[in-house]
Length: 344
Image (cartoon, rainbow, N blue to C red; front, side, top):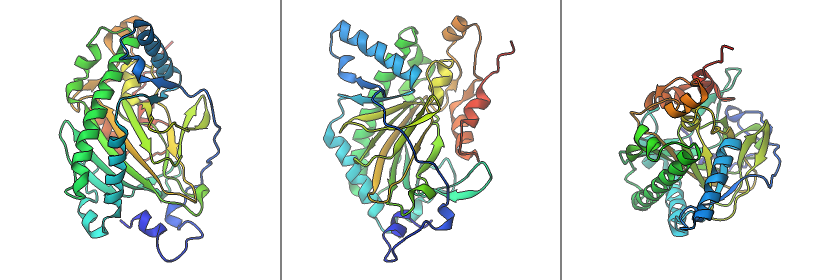
């Protein structure tokens, strides 16, 4: 596939979006001071009052927004910077060196390129994005080049995995589940971790193309950092909001498996990546899910508490496969299919 980066940097100045990228979209979004900011240091401070405040604020963010900005998370700035440098090196490699990683199957553990999707009218279009996606846990996969990528990724994925497990343990506490219940039920020792680097070059017509259309994520928690160029928008109560984050913070959204496991308490937030016509945006994403073999359904103590299960169970690898091959790009079709309608 032709790189969007190469297209945007070609000697021919693009004044309009090539037809294959056409996706009429409404980028309008509001700014909000209400997007939750969660201070991770309160959890590990050793002060019961601060820890209690953290648990309360975390639970509220997951259940009301499905999204929060995490600060003081303990991941060194240098480790985050190293990921951007390594990703940039990869995207700058010659096309022939990246060609071997063009996807042949949706479940390939190493893949790069750009992506075609279909809208609700069955129109196929290409996303204005180059990507690198890697399965990094429980098995670690990484391209041979650039040389700096492997070490940077091993360090970053290990640190984010530890952070994800700490947050999930705290979320389990907000759900008033027994200590270790989520860890054991979802086998988080072998949690599935997907790494993605996304490059969004400047677009001559940002309203006629899109980086990633509205969607939800398949896992439990997704972490996102970016190079200082905004572009992430989230939906809350039917309205779209820009996410403007402090430097070195991590943007965290709850995903489909957490909504299912919590029997609907934690919301899988719809989000999208919009474009601009001035600056290249790079985002580094780590999606953290249950063990690939885990069969995920509502937690039994929550079902007992609610009197019914609101979602069907499904093996996590099957869920990923279904979401990756779905044709719709708007709404949450797969998650909605998992919902059990109340017969009352």
